[in-house]
Amino acid sequence: MNETEKLDEKALQGTWDLTVLYDGFDDPKLTADVEKLKKLIEEAGKIAAIRKELTHRDLLHRYIDTAEKTASLLEKLFGYTYLVYATDTSNDRAMALMGKLRAMSASIAPFDTAAQHEIAAMEDLDALVGSDAALKGYSYFISRIKEDNKYLLGEKEEEIMALMNTSGADAWSELHDTLTSTVNVSYRGKTVTLSEVRNLAYDGDPAVRKDAYDAELACYPAVEQSAAFALNSIKLQVINECRLRGFESPLAQALYKSRMSRETLDALLGAMNEYMPRFRDYLKAKSRALGHDGGLPWYDMFAPIGSIDRKYTVEEAKDYLLDIFGRFDSELHDMVKRAFEERWIDFFPHKGKVGGAFDSGVPCIKQSRVLTNFDGAFGDIVTLAHELGHAFHDRQVFSHSPLQQDYSMPVAETASTFNEVLVVSEAIERAKTKAEKLALIENQLSDACQIICDIYSRYLFESSVFDNRDNEFMSPERMCELMHQAQLASYGDGITEDTLHPYMWLCKGHYYSGHLSFYNFPYAFGGLFARGLYALYKEKGPEFVPLYKSLLNATSVSNVEDTAKMTGIDLTDKAFWRAGLQSLADEIDEFISLVDEK
Image (cartoon, rainbow, N blue to C red):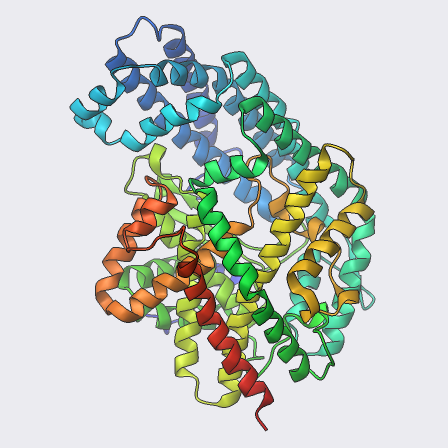
């Protein structure tokens, strides 16, 4: 099938294919895998029980073998179940199996903790790894065991923490997903989903954007109390866990999990804060272009400017992406082609489907699955590029053992954002008219404003929630107040203050995780790091591509600073981040010139 041929009927329906994993919850293969998982958990218990009787070498081999098989099977089972749930949050069988799998996963905790404590205490650990070819392949995983041991609790405590999490943070997170995917939004006499009404922020009609904004804000009071309970509960659980484990703060824990230093974060945020006035200049220029005085109303933040107000079909999105990715790398091009043709993507919004977009790697089949809420706007093509960038990153780490395929939050946004820059930058270069160029530059700046201004506001908000949670249970009104303060500090006079979005704490799922706090600064990291890599690509041309793939491959077995050093980048130097921000400032100057041109 060549790129100009039509996608088949099932692909055009926009649903993903999960039958490569299981053919429903009654599939005998699924039942058999659950039984296999039970036996692997029993084996983990046996290893923990006799750990002191085994030689150090035998313990390492047996632990790694069982942990790898267990992790792979859990990932397959849980991955399938969550993918079903993500497109149908009312699916009782999916929710039941997720609960069962979480409980089974929690039951491994004491065995895992016992084995890891034993491994971390081995005085001959480095010598064993260095002299055993099989163990060398797991050297990074083993080094993390030794480092993580500092923050591990006792066996019983880890079991309790894992079990309580299933009815704690995980349950609150699922409640949030259910609330936001099923809340009824009354828009112009019709009942629509939250995803559908938020997509209207990109509509070309200013009245549609304003009505959608009003309808969105009006729906939140129906679920705000439940969402506030969820967020308060999750954040308190994180605070308590950090204290028990010995982390100075939730931010310190997030940085540790990110394999990133505070020096890097300070350099990043410091540079972002320096350039915040330039993004306010962009917002005020967009406001002028749309006929407003002063700051831009929030509901016009994503208003299209220029001539790219057309809608794209799924086939047109596919052709658009393949054309640009084909100019960069054949492997990326071919993977994206497969994603469309083999139904890796679930495209369209509907009631019961979670909002936003995500990529989920499926290592057992060396594929990914991508969820979007595609509406046909150019921004949806950029979103597809972003999520398929995650899929490409997944592909680069599939060569590692299953225990060494996880990469940290900051670098997780590198390939995705690189894809965005690649798509929009090349589109700008090919623009034939002023209106088209203006639209493309604005689209890129709109995305950049999200990863700089909005991400900075999210970082400030989450910091304030953690700072206050010890002393107060924050009501929905208090959450809205903290969000207003954070947005005002970030957007300043770039946004009309009385139109700031007080409920961003409710609609953004990233706050509702007991496992990943501060899932905000990684987007800024990824965006600016990707721009630095894109500059290298423009400088080096095709010879950059193998280096780029090697860098992505290294992200799951290195910290972020060492990964960046592969390309000669010092992440703790504010000058590096300023360079990426200055490239955006130059685009802001060009945008202002085009807007104000008589």
